[in-house]
Image (tube, rainbow, N blue to C red; front, side):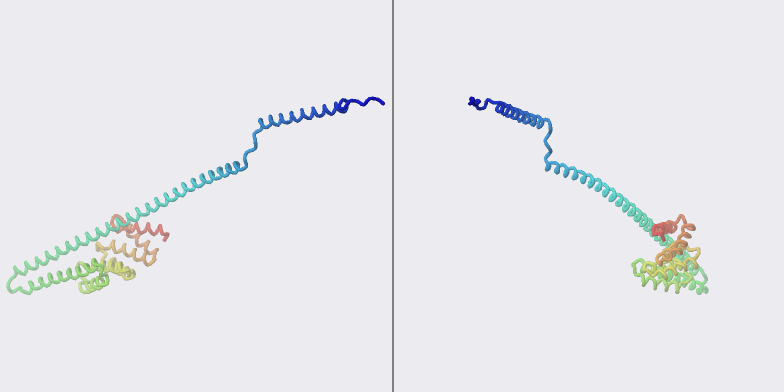
Amino acid sequence: MGEEPARGTGLPAVITRISRGSFGLSAACIAALAMVGCASTPPDQDPVQIKLNDVDTRLARIERVLANQSLLDLANQNEALRADLRAMHNDIDQLTNSLEAGRKQQRDLYADLDRRMKALESRGGAAAGSGAGAASGDAGAGGSGADSAAGAADDKAAYQTAFDLLKNSQYDRAIAAFQKFLATYPTSQLADNAQYWLGEAYYVNKSFPEAQAAFQRVVDKYPQSRKRPDALLKIGYCQYELKQFDQAKGTLSQVTSQFADTPAGHLAQQRLDKMATEQH
């Protein structure tokens, strides 16, 4: 028999060694390539960080929307406040004009009363002088002049009593007093004023049909009265309160055309503007 080859020295052993060496080399190469790849390729981001970034982006977007909405709300509020301010200015202007018109009416009334009082006093003085200079047998004429002066004094006193009741807001009593005055002194020089203030007493008492009738009597019975523009204006006001809007527009337009440069004309135009705003 031949001699057995030494262990580990045959061709199979050599191939085994080469294979083992190649495997070790390959493993080393793979490890090295993995290290290079790890160095050149960035690691994936942390999913938690991605979610946080997304939340931050959404919050920023929502904050921008809210900021824009807040600015819009502020702009709308500012415009609403401006509109309210304009409305307040308009109301103040109307109140100022109404107050001035009322003051002018009062001044006109007192001036008219003063003029009439002086005229009555002059007539009374003239009658008294005529009685004093007359013959002793002419006592009757003197007595007639005294009666006339006394009647004029009663006329004014009755009117003043009724007017004071109106000023003191005793409207029912003022209505009764003016009615009595007109019945007692129908030809008085103060009759047109008494008729007008009777209408005012009804008006402030919210008795609009009666007020309208009283003012209409001023227009019809005393066409030359200084109270005619105001009476015509108040007729329009009464028609407005009674919701007779077409008639009110016609009456107020008549005031603005006939008495354009008077307080009554200005107030009539203001009421027409208000009706236009209210779409009446």
